[in-house]
Image (cartoon, rainbow, N blue to C red; front, side):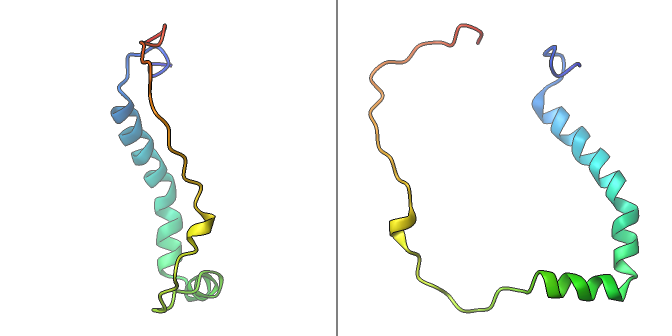
Length: 77
């Protein structure tokens, strides 16, 4: 409510949400650290990337170029 009302800075909101999420995840991280089976499943699900360097296919890049001709303040800014 304070953020929507403009009473809370986005940076403060971000740090508060980060702290709350970390507090919620702390017991899960603790369980994970002591559970070899969960760690094994993670390694199978998310294998580490190899050292192989692949060339990037530049044809897949969506690059758009434009020219700004007019600028004005947003009405609610």
